[in-house]
Amino acid sequence: MGGSTEIIRRLEDSVGRALVGKPEVVRLAVIGLVARGHLLIEDVPGVGKTTLASALARSIGASFQRIQFTSDMLPSDVLGVSVWDPKTGDFVFKPGPLFTNIVLADEINRTTPKTQSALLEAMAERQVTIDRTTHRLSPGFLVIATQNPREFEGTYPLPESQLDRFMMRVNLGYPSVEDEAEVLNRYGTMAATGDAAPERSPPPPIITADQLEAARQTVDQVHVSAEVNAYILAIAKASRENPHISLGLSTRGALALLRAARVAASMRDSDFVTPDDVKLVAPWTIPHRLALSSEAALERRNDVAIVRALLERVPVPR
Image (cartoon, rainbow, N blue to C red; front, top):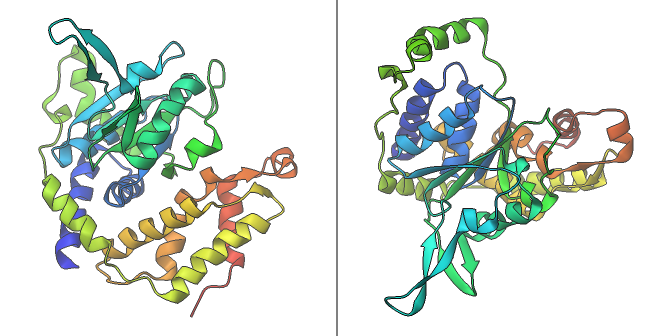
């Protein structure tokens, strides 16, 4: 396990240097990357969402595209389009920005459901089908999407089917006073002059794509006992029977919980998953997949708080 743990830690350190004061968010983003999962970042503008996505891509030398979603975007603006080539007398496919390694889907809830749905096949199967032709995406394809949960005018809520395709949902939050002072010191010159400060330059690649894939294959071998598997299934079952939840954890969600827990175990240099690894990632892997009951919504219950309470009630295997 030592080799994969070292690679993951190097990646975590690299991204952490770009995003000041958010070690937990950085760790979760790295867990999602290594576990081949997509990441949803919910927060207000200007707290580092783009910085996080860019640092992840640059640290592994991966290609990176940012898509600014708007209400007038069409699916072809994301996927690409077939255009007529008079020289060959045939249609030629022109790939869209989705054909890259890491995509920042910025303000994903500002585009229409029709355009949102263009991502469903890509996120689930890492391929897109256009004009009855299937085009494969990069094996390392990853979506990091952002949305502002406090602004509802001109937005379209993500459907459950799309939320379920995100491995994790995280919130960056505002930095502490000390960390914000560090940001001002580091980037203040650029803000004042409009020039690119040296510190703002993207980090050089820390690991190669081959090293990342080797780490992923090692993580895939982390042992999960029958007891831990049963624990994950018990959590899923409890979510489906909880009176505050009208739509419980899906099978895809249980698999995401398992994959994320494997990475968490690897990050502590262990070759087996414990219930604590599951509990560590559960508050970021489960809540966005749930639909709260009308009573819970009226009582303004928080989905993360409901999941934490659920974890307290599910017996932990010994």
